[in-house]
Image 1 (cartoon, rainbow, N blue to C red):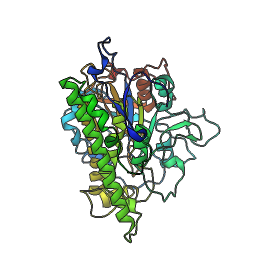
Image 2: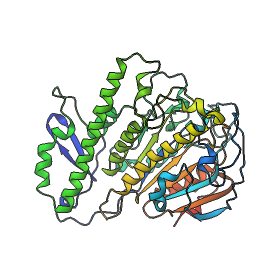
Image 3: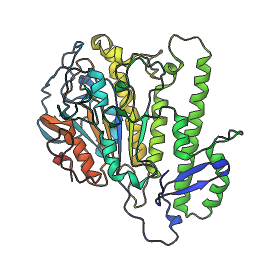
Image 4: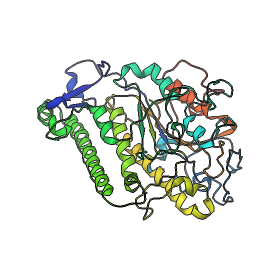
Length: 449
């Protein structure tokens, strides 16, 4: 772990370490804290979306049939190019209703597709890369160093972890290559391995060492915590208690899911035990861990891949279906599974909204929120799961990036606007002195304050 002066840690017995958010009472008369850093996080959704549920003006569009290869489809939604108030949310976007002033919906952005490679593998692995057509020679995929690592090259030295890569795919029945299951890459052919087990994420972030008594981190540092609380003012005591309770909740949720997985492994099932784990709880738990890392300054750059591309392994979408369902298989027959796919899309948006709302409720040193100081982007590498189109991708940007991004808008881009324009904008807001990224043309000026 790199040396950092930004954070305070509680250290308990057996080597347990708990990082703390900024607390005014611990400055001991020092100068006011600097402006909170800007964070960047990605929430990647696989398989695209059902367009008629996500995009305005397409509710009555024809239900597309399955297309085996990538196609380019331009849909006239009736929305004019430019910025519009983000007021009337579509059914899939509805979970963002209370947060619509804190997000920007972006439509009309495209990604380059290099023929000769798998549609699903390229849309996921190259989502944060968007390398130009002929810039990569050693791979069939237009895949270079991804945005998160390029940003971390500039800001990563200020935190213990340069980046944090998380995935919500716990299945071990890997039938596809790594290109279907990773969005973060050090460079062409060099994947940045993601953490998929919440317990391993927890141990990595909070430095817990194994102890025979199996006591959790909050138990191990409880004595230090009680001592520390005596030094805190009222506001900090409330912030400390809220954060401490949040960590305790994460631990309890991990234990619950681990016990459920053990119980499932002892039952004869057609699918792997992981298929029956409650999907939303797993996603929210990984998201909670990501937020804790961003809040406490352990990292300023994170990616969260919600699921792999094209795998046919099923998931239990609790509250939706009575058995595990395969998102990928359903996407190839929208006419038969339209309602189920719309439910899955909204389910994913509910998890994103949960994390956005949680970030909005975390107060920073200067009175702003964690969300105010973040760029948290929902997106998918496909504009539609049935047609495999790389055009008009579903993108939502939450947070104002330290006050540099406009929110509460729907930005409809001109046809052919590269997704890399958005990544260039992200990089510049994060402080990188660059004027090009991959196949970008220019930053998205309509997003900037």
